[in-house]
Amino acid sequence: MKTLWKMVSELSTTNESSPQGKIIALMNQKGGVGKTTMAFNMAHALARQSKRILCVDMDPQFNFSSMFGVNPAERPHIHHLLVNSLKELKPLHTACLLDEVIVRAKTIDGVHIDVLPAGQELSGFELTVAGINSPRQLILKKFIEKNNLRSMYDFIVIDGPPTLGLLVVNILCAVDGVLYPFVPDSFSQQGLKNIQQVLEDIREMEICPVPRNLGYIPNLFDARRKQVHADFEKIGADLGSGRMFVPFTNRVQFTKAQASRKSVFEFQANEFKEIQEQFMNMAQTVQQELMS
Image (cartoon, rainbow, N blue to C red; front, side, top):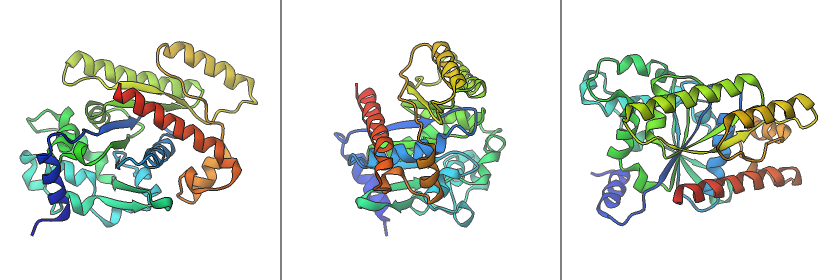
């Protein structure tokens, strides 16, 4: 008997006029910049605009999965699916299908977001695929294409690891655009520069189109500190071209939401209105940029 996922996939394949969804990632080689929190709330903002959303966790720390209440230790995850997609690694294949791995996460107001969780095994991804003949940089991209995920979702939101390496290259080769969260300090700035260097390497290798720069997201911005303003201005000047979103200063609201594993949209208090509007505006801007 065909699974529901299989039937939906086949239906999407036969509908040639079906619009192709967009894939975005939130990236910074520096950890602690709020990347996962931004991805989580961006996904909810897009979902509240009646978009079909798939969140893909590509970080071995699986914090993105945990925010949706998913425990990867209890189930197969994206690492198993990526390995299963490679015929050369058949001895390492796991008995799991895509529709068994995807988690349907429910939130308030009827918003539904699907999640492809990560797990610690992703930390060994580069070593696992080291000996294959297929282009190792395109494993994620081909997995998405093979499973027709663009036809099933309006947006696929990927949370990447705060590192450099093959996982990051796979993400950058698979997405249409990248958002860059950062905090206004020199360490975060260097993390952005390192990611930009990876993009330059991809451009020189000509293995795939380079994703669009969807903009920089200043986070944990403490407007009371003069040094923060100075660092922010310096980073903006060094980055040059690229959209700079309004800084997020709502540290308390983020902390409250994250502690309860909720998006900022699940709070009715007036103190959350500003941050909700920021995410909705950012989601609208991303849509306009990718549709142009």
